Length: 271
Image 1 (cartoon, rainbow, N blue to C red):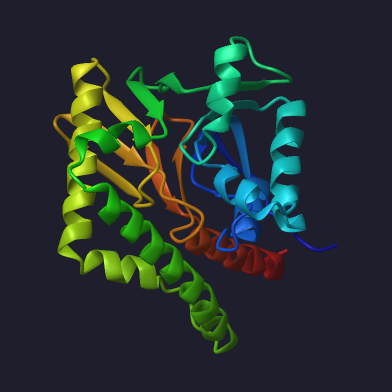
Image 2 (cartoon, rainbow, N blue to C red):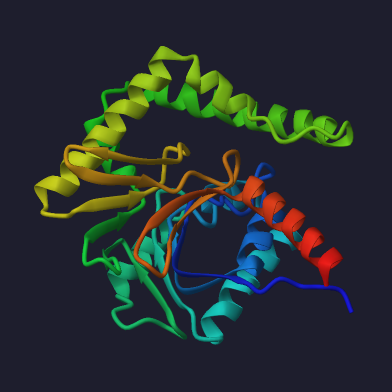
């Protein structure tokens, strides 16, 4: 009988920016992570469905993307508390909230614009998608549009580039991250955004903030505030978990899954 490692148990799992419906979404990796982790609470921190793309293309979701949605619904039915925080690409759900606030959840799923999270250690975190801080980051609208267009093009190139790398036995390499790390404008935007988010959390009396939106995973202290960004599933494939002892960790999901798979192979040989 083949060996199967037990699921990795955490108190809470935070995911954002899956952008289901886009060609650059790594839905298979997201599904693998959801199948590998047992969490008491699952936080979907905005832009899970990319309603902009779905509406523009008028196409149904690919099967792999539908499987992710079915998995989330299955987790909710099986007792996982799912909290869906709306983002700007799924802002259509914000209009639903105005007409019908989901105060107590629907089939174990709560829909909201922001959420107060208290960690196992008693620290208070604001969980919010983060597009709300765009107004605090100085960037002309046409530059923002241009940046989005270039980023989308890089993601498309990145997907084909990494397919070729995989065939050659190489690991994932992010072209988009490499470009961002060398762009002064991008680095200034990221820095300004992180400062705006952490300053807001501190001003409102929170110990930390958990957000997404800018597709840059992070775990750092800013303005005496714990700043956590979950990253995204178009490029970084990252997530934040709170362990059962109350400690937070930023996971690079693909390397974590590879490490777990290698461990399963070794344990299978022992068994």
